Amino acid sequence: MKKQNVRTLSLIVCTFTYLLTGAAFFDALESETESKRKTVLQEIQVIIRRKYNISDEDFRIMETVVMKSEPHRAGQQWKFTGAFYYATTVLTTIGYGHSTPSTIAGKLFTMMYAMIGIPLGLVMFQSIGERVNKLSSVIIRSVRSSLHCKQTNASELDLICVVTFLSSLTILGGAAAFSRYEGWSYFDSVYYCFITLTTIGFGDMVALQKDNALSQKPEYVMFSLIFILFGLAIVAASLNLLVLRFVTMNTEDERRDEAQAIQALAGAVRLDGDVITANGSILSGQLGHHCTETTSVDIEDTSVCSCPCGCIPTNTRHRRSPTQITHLLPVLPMHELHLPQGSVPPPPAIYPNHRASI
Image 1 (cartoon, helix red, strand yellow):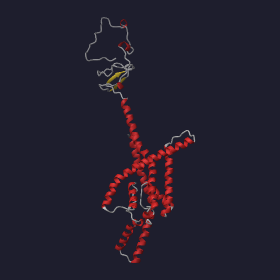
Image 2: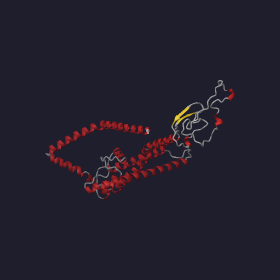
Image 3: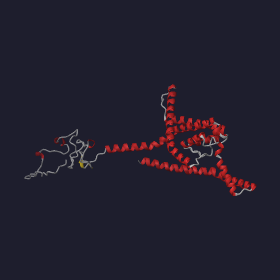
């Protein structure tokens, strides 16, 4: 488990370091431009109010009218076409913010719709991504087989290259279409496609929001919806290869640690009392009163246990008779024993609950 803890801590540190680095870069890149834009807007506001003699209250009303009328430039947002576009942004979690419900019933239904639709969409895009990866692996295998390559199976690196190529092709092709229909620069169109397919959805650039496109350009509406759904499927294929692989690494490590712990417990032998081996060493430990086959003691390597627990099983494969353990102690004949004259050793006392140790 230590490996997973270290990995989690490393990810936290790397994430916060990445956030701090990004904040520093965005501050350096955008802060000065923001200040200049604010100064210019304030100067224009002062000029207009002086020129037309507009009061503060009237100017706030004008600001409200301009901001509220912005979504209506694309036509009616809540007819079927615009509502389908809104439902797509909810289900895909893009959330441009170009149109939002204003009624209590609409807000309540949006929450209920999102609770069911977002998981459904994630599962659908994940399944499509798996099918895309499977199709890519089949195509790679067929191409390599036709070229008579030794390695025909597609590796993860091959699939990553294919999905990256498809994602890049989708973004570049979609940017060309949006640049034509929306009048954006090609770079801004690429930026819009990337923000859309990664479901960031800032809402600073939204398609189908001018020239009454929702009702006057049905082919463009269809293209935009197909681009969003197909592009998100390609992105899901990338996530299936990259993100999920890193996410499952912790689970694999946990299973590996659990398997190692089980093996260690299965091979552990605990002894109760001391066992004197044939070479004179003493093994100390604990062994329960219920010995199993995995914790049996080999008689060839040990002598009689000095404890009364009876931990040596009776069904061992190699058993020595009392006459086969004479190699442990030297045994001399009786006539070679030099005993003092007139002294006969007393017989050993026998206790019923005592075991001698060899």
